[in-house]
Image (cartoon, rainbow, N blue to C red; front, side, top):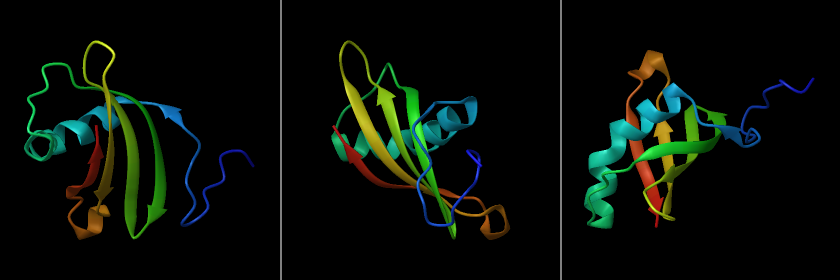
Length: 91
């Protein structure tokens, strides 16, 4: 029951995975453009996701020292290309 996925519902917060880091890397250029900063340290630490017509991700990223940024990312379903798009970034 704890692993039940509810369409449209958010999962609980989880430790970031290798796949989460890959998603972050896919939108890093967009993040740097929007924040007007270059990130030497850029490591996903936590995430949660939401199954819709694809996946929405809220990802907490360690950006060095005591800094974190929060990304809102959409990933299309594989049958739709699986592309990743940055929706929002909070510094």
